[in-house]
Image (tube, rainbow, N blue to C red):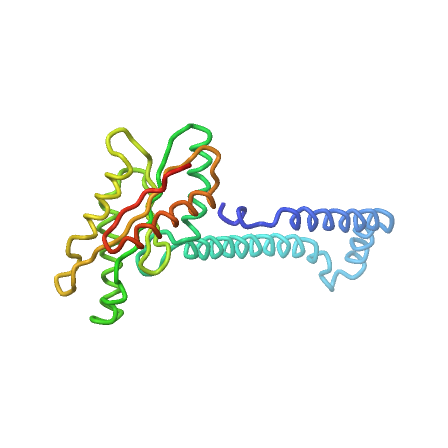
Amino acid sequence: MPHRQYMHRPTVIKDLTVLVVVNLIFFFAFMNFDVLESLYQFSRDYEHFEVDEIIPLGITVAISFLIFSYRRIKELGLMAQTLEHMSLLDPLTGLPNRRAGQISLVTWCDLANEKGQDFAIYQIDLDNFKKINDMYGQMVGDDVLKLVAQRVGNNLPEGALLCRWLDDNFIVVANVTTKKTPAEFALELQQLISKQIMTATVDLTCCIGFSLYQKGHIVEDILHDVEDALAVAKHRGENNIHGHVTA
């Protein structure tokens, strides 16, 4: 039931408490004044008013309103679910966006702390991407970004995460294995992008900074490390890779 996820539990509990109290007050009032008996007697005395039909009508109206309210709550829940899903996606590439990446990194850090599975984070920045926009137009630039996302995404190992971080900047998160060092994996990512993306445009290059997760690190720590690594790579010039070295 998707709507349950979006209910504000304290408000629900408060409203239910108020409803229970109000209905208990009415219940005791009905008991003291014999409302139902009075209504029944009135219906017998004035049968031509058809007052006795009010009771079953009230029941059906109450059930109808319950069904109506439930369906509206369900629709609102589905709408909230859709909006949340859209808020986590980059509209251009269809990749998880920065917010989704930060949320996922919390899970990666938690699992690394619990199970000891090391992972590395790679930040990719396209070199001179503004030149493509200036030479060929923004629509071509957008197509290039989509093709970069598609090419990198299609060549990631199982379970890896790819996000569009900002503009022409991407984040990759992948487990560290014995088959390939983080530096070798970063080089593979760079080579994927360095191949010509579109025949009508100039070749792309990129700089990559990467950092390994350290036990006890939180998301802010590892993002800070990888951004430092990328800054060093870009300072060296185009098409460079640099890994953050822990002290």
